Image: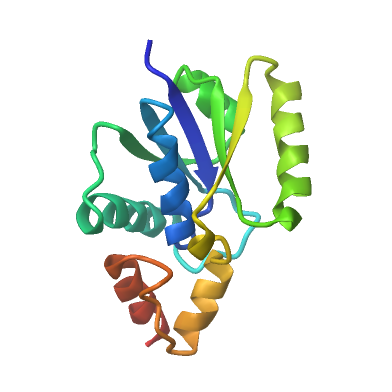
Length: 164
């Protein structure tokens, strides 16, 4: 039986930190479903369809990840519902710093309360990518900074187009 993990997030935009988590997860699971949130509680720079395309471009076009091992979807409901749909009992989450842990710990507990069969796997990106956040990437882009160390070529191009 294939081990499938759901990796939910806003990915506004996807960064090398996110990509590290995906890459590392593929060493322990068979498939990752990157679930791009379509919820309306945040003020996104990119809309849902743009973010899905950015994730696909970064993973498949820029970095040549295996399309058979990664699926990119949009969602606007509970992550546990996505788990049911994809017959997954694993939620994948990335941790950057200790400050992320409290929120992620609570989220994992709530997901476990919603479905006792779901486990959350926490992965850390490589040290050089742990400080990267989508928020900082957007700020650097807005101020016309160099983004090469933070995200892929297609994402950089999309950010530049947004801020021109």
